[in-house]
Image 1 (tube, rainbow, N blue to C red):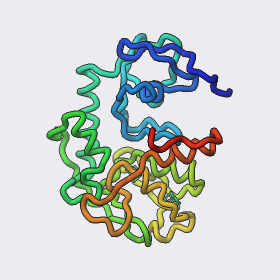
Image 2 (cartoon, protein in one colour):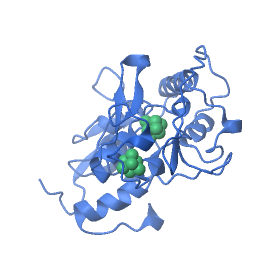
Image 3 (spheres, rainbow, N blue to C red):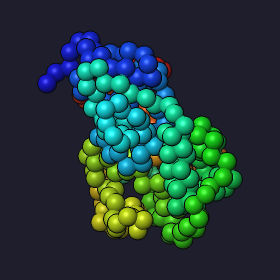
Length: 247
Ligand code: SF4
Ligand code: SF4
C-alpha cells in the first residue's frame, strides 16, 4: 500500500502527540520527530532485525517491554522511551555486548568514531558487571581492501542485511547458535576468497564498531558512514535522492 502524503496516525510518545505513517515503527516515527531512542542493530534502508534489544520502550497496554525498531505504530498508542527501568535494561544489555567481545578502544581503528562507544557514553556504562569472555577469534585480513575483526563484532547483522538487500551479493551470514554465533563470508571462506564479494565496501561503511575496516587505517582513523544505505535506497525505492546533509 502506498504511503499517504502526510502522516495520519496519532501516537503519543513521552507525553507528546506526534503523527506517524501507517507503516512506521515506533523507532522510525520517534527518529523523524527528534526523539532519541538508543539503538545499535537498526539501520535506515534495510530490514528490521531486532537483535540488540537496546531500543526497548514501554508501550501502554502491553505487558512487556517492546523493541521500538520492530513495533508497528497503532492509532493513539502511548509509548514511553525514558524511565529508570528502561535505562537499567539498556545499560545491562550494553554491558553484556561489551563483555562478550574484545572491545579495547585504545587499540581500535574506530576509537572516537564508534557507535558502540558512543552508546556506552550515552548510557553511562563506566564498568561492566558480567564476566568478560575474552574470546580468541581469528582476524580475517584476507581481503585486499578490508579487514574483519570478529573480536569487535557485535552480530548486529547490519553488514549481512546491507550486502544482501542493497548490494545483492549476500556474502555475509551468521553461523552457529546463541553465544556460539559468528559471522561467515560465502559459507565459511576467507573473505578475500569469497567470489560473491564485489568489493563495494557497503558492509564496511555501515558497521557500527571497528569490526569491519578499510585496510591501512591506524587507531582512531576508521570512519564509517551509516547513512549511506538510506541514501542509496531512497533513490531505489522512491525515485528521489535524500539530501545527505539533512540525514
Ligand atoms: S564489500 Fe560489498 S559485496 Fe563485499 S561483502 Fe561487503 S557489501 Fe558485500
Ligand atoms: S561485522 Fe560489523 S556490521 Fe557486521 S555484524 Fe559484526 S558488528 Fe555488525
